[in-house]
Image 1 (cartoon, rainbow, N blue to C red):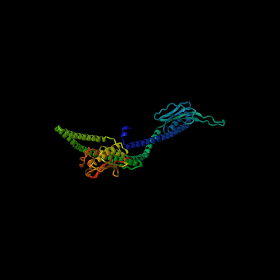
Image 2: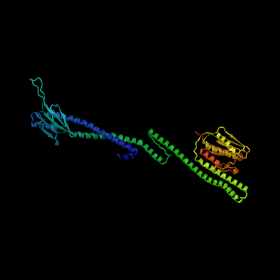
Image 3: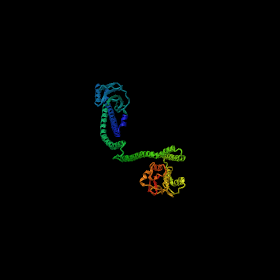
Image 4: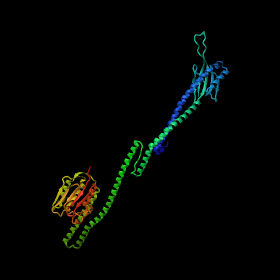
Length: 485
């Protein structure tokens, strides 16, 4: 069998080939076995018949051997060829002379080796075409009144006949053909039943294979509908469960791709807005620096005024440096690995409340911090968030004699609340954009990047940040964090 054909054949073709080969082998094997057994039995019967013929011919050869007359020996030959299948008949005298021999179809026998003293017929030789049977001829002397016991039998000679195996071969062939026919009659229903079973087994597999090809081509919404035995139905259920999982995974991936595409589009828009605002924000300090430098050149004789403009230049350069540093720190946050753990934000808030107002010793700020503020987050990044929100609250409550800043957690989420100037809630969205400023915040120093940094960090934690405020009534900045398992 061609190995490549076997490998490329379908399961149904392989199974059909195995069944056909198996049934054919069983039919031929049964026929050969039947022919062998039947032929052996028929051959044994022919051998028994051949020895019986030789025995009978020996009994009829007594007178021919005693008198050695031509007429008697011819009669013996006629009797020998009266048996069906006799090919050669020979008659030997007591001194082993061949008295007469007759042959059919020119068959010649090998030389005769007699068995002196053998009683009854025996098989002398066997060839592929015939058996050679021999039998010694004896005569028993008659008892007389003057003798007490009978004398020993007298050996007169031997007869020898060759019997053909043609009948045996024909019988074997007939038995083989009949056995094949009978086995085929029995094997045909078995073969048809096997074909039905193969079809019953392979039809669901063929349907499943077709469905799998569709799945391979990217169709995840297809399902197998297989009927049959319990394991076939279980295979169908397992395949459908796998396709449902693949469909969920694919849907999730599509959603992620869609979200990532939306995020990239938003990032592109944010970058474009960032460029515009960066140019706008940097244009102001650069204009001040350029104007101050021009005034210094014009009024170089007035030392006091020169010093004033130099201070302005230093201030604007400081603003630019702060702005660039904040931008650099914000860009690094994108590459920072989130190492989340369970922490309490209260100690972090207390530390910031002690350190941030030190630059403003004249301010009176009251901090109200909840004792326990559990969170699952990156402590370092949430320190930046709280620092920016607290700094923002300090800046926007600068006009109050006593500023009050609360830090804690309620039903909405984590919060930083102040009693500062507040703002119009219609403009709250722009707070978290780079260089985003409110209309009433022109007099408040800052880079305009702190809240954008807080937004970036909370978003990376898969949380949300927003602000609630009213003009003159303070502001509350909320953010959420997913709970850790």
